[in-house]
Length: 290
Image 1 (cartoon, helix red, strand yellow):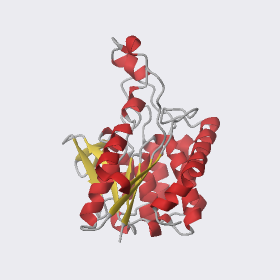
Image 2 (cartoon, rainbow, N blue to C red):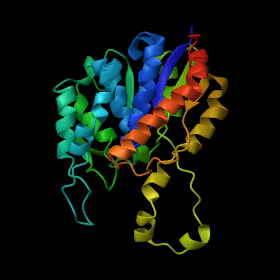
Image 3 (spheres, rainbow, N blue to C red):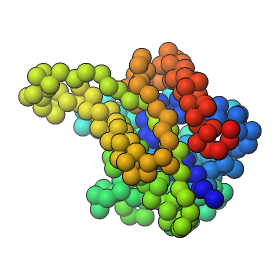
């Protein structure tokens, strides 16, 4: 019997599009996502959504609440203006995470999960799970996986410092496949991957030829590094027909991960709904729910 693994990309506020799509999927399935999937894996904002599904078993409209305008305004409340400090202090983000997760620990997860962060001490990816790290606070893991460099400060967990899992990989589909193999040895693993949109705007090479660090920062090097197309191509080759991907060009959605204006939030909601319109039938077929 096939085991289904839900894999969720990073992308900051663009996780709203992911949540909108998952909300529509759940309505069509007529059961919670935690009942359909056997494992959920996430990076950055996808890691937070994964923990919401795994630990809180949130379903229905509440899945969208974490991306409410009020929450996003709080999370992305600018407190530093220095070029040498992170854009946000991270304190307000932790307030929101504590509002949701309180003092819950990873062992409270009802659905197996794997949450990706990047260990600054070892320079290697770190996978947090309820199996290997039962006593860690969920809020701390959520803060670590979403500690995007230049935006939020690194997070200390058990004497190690972590930043956003997207530093290692923004699309954790291959990690999802690997974790599924370890958790369900001998079973068929099917990876259902949801992105946060990608930016394929043309970058004129001749203008970037002599760019320094400041020019690259202004030119959007962080969003560029967070693109997930390489992992997508590798997953297609390695996992093959047992890999399904929901994603699209950003079009008018802002590529920066912290643009939380009303107009951009509406564009993200529309993008999530377009994904459902485009991928509904193929999604249900892949999940054997037709």
